[in-house]
Length: 516
Image: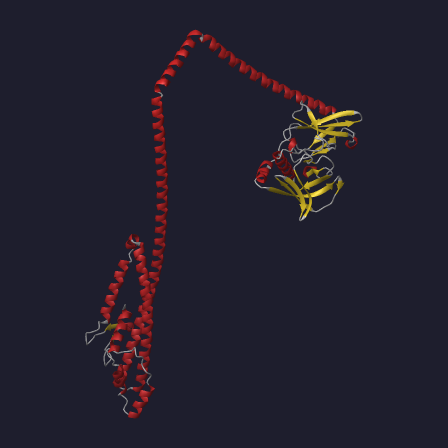
């Protein structure tokens, strides 16, 4: 504001068009016309935007540290520096009051616009300050030039004017520092106001969303209560309409119960107690029978293990491999024995032979889950039988893997062809695709086999000789073409068997092994 007053001060004198007269008055101190012409030639032209308050310099008084303590005005048209400073102080205090925290807390948006306005005013003040510095610099240069051309009292007045100009420059610099500090505070306050406004808007939106959600919840509750009231009203009307019939039916039932209690109350109660006793006796006998069967099975297994020179090794779960070996006390060689594997629902039930499973190693497949696996060993005209301790358990994670594959229209597995038509075959990785209507074996653009599900197709776990039986699969697409495929893992092999049998069953085809 002080800079703007100074600018008005200079612009007012510019409108009086006294710049030319002032220059002529200053140049009259030169005694010789020649020197006057030289001075007029050497004096740099003063900018048109510079004007003076009067025909002579005002009598400023300088205090300590070059502070201006008195600036009297003779014409009384322009206010004094003291009045200007007092007015600026009041304006700043008013601005501080307008920018109080209480007002900011009440109206974020209004104070934000006020802060933006203050920032704009600070920018204008920067421009005005720059113009003031330029004018003071030009004025000081002109006075320095005139000081070299004057002597005596005029020279002292010029020096005093120079000192006053320097004091004005110092005062202007101090005001600029204060304005810079004020600008920094205003920017800081504006950023705070902006953040506070955004937080307030965010909070209002959040509360509005919460209120809308509560309104919707209340509306739904009211609708449900209205529906319940309507249903209750309809049911009450129906009950009132059927009231006489219901009451008559209740009376008839009570009469029937009373008649039954009067005629045979003791017999009914005796029959109920007798039935309860019979149920408890049957449960006890069933538990005792199961216990005896378990003890008998344990005894038979212990006796058989003592007399049988062969032992069955391996985890009894899907994905493992069962292996028959001779006990350490026996000198019999398992490779010279005849072996046949069987599966049965239990140890005492009827069993069925697994065709092709005639080696000392057998890898259970998904069809064996929940069944007991047995093996008959014929050695030196003697027959020995080894069996698993219980039914084969499913593999962990197989069910979830199959369910994820069932969601796809076509499942692909990476395999290696170990045998083809019974002959060893070395090949690279192939893709074994199991679809809903057919199975395909290919590598890139080359297709080894692609057949739909039919009665001539066979698919099961490997039962013959294989390097890794738990990962191998036997597949016969059609008669005259067979493959022995090795998968990357046991889970992939079992998932492919379960998936292909499920799709084949949907096509009314049962996929089994050879001669099953």
